[in-house]
Image (cartoon, rainbow, N blue to C red; front, side):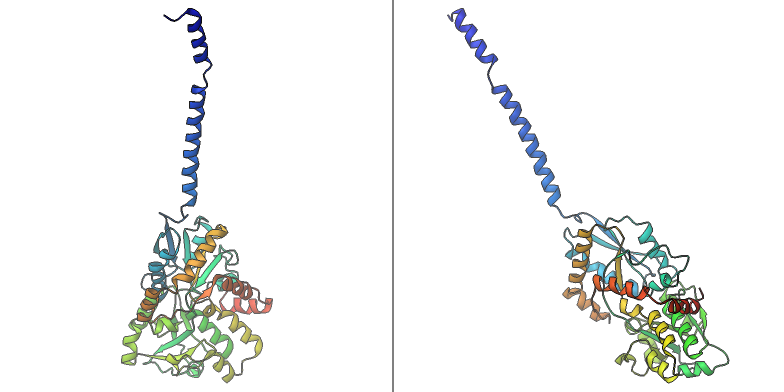
Length: 365
């Protein structure tokens, strides 16, 4: 039998034992460590894992811009850490003005929405159109997949075999496009300003595919678009076999071998002895070819996400499967970095007042 004094001493030891306190402390530490590990694990996961990137294309399905967008989208995700899905969303309208306004002003700056606009979209801002709700200098430019020259074609059953024939014509040909920054409209207005060629511009087609169909139907007889599109898809392959169209000019500084019979715009300017002040306007309005197929992400996107998108875009354009698909589709891959494009857009938008004013008059602003 335990003496009362011993029982009292044992109770005192139990009362002051550190074990319950130690247990509580250990439990708290375990909970904290668990939370820390979970947090660290979440932070180490790539931002784009499990996410979807919307690739907004400013033209309709089947147009050459759309083909480029879908080609890039098929391969881009595997080069982005986390391997997000990349889906194309067509948003045609007003030569991609609708799409550019949307990605600039509506899309969240979270790095999950990019846009492929018309490469002459800068002209809308240059001439100060009221519909423009963006500043291209504030976008983050990710890169371009190609460089482009414009080809001006005419139905072969018309009497127009050269630009000189258009200048002499009593009845101007009707050419069509999607809007006032489409290649068709720009080429028509440049020819009118520089050499006096009259062309009836018909705008409002949703995209290039619809304008080409209008040429086939005879609604219009001419159009201007990129050389790669003209030699990269139907109906042009079939047209060339049937001798359906003629090529009257191209916008590059030297003739593309695929359309060697077509003089460059600069050859035509020389032929008609166009003065330097008007040549500068031509250069400003035809810079779109240098932008190629540009891809932009919403202003305000975090710098680390911009870097991820730029790096992965460049790597995707070196992908062997992408290059094989591009070759099969007659699409020439020629990468331009986002940094180069950002410098270019600042340069083309920084024009003397007289050049801007002439461009505004050309485009009916």
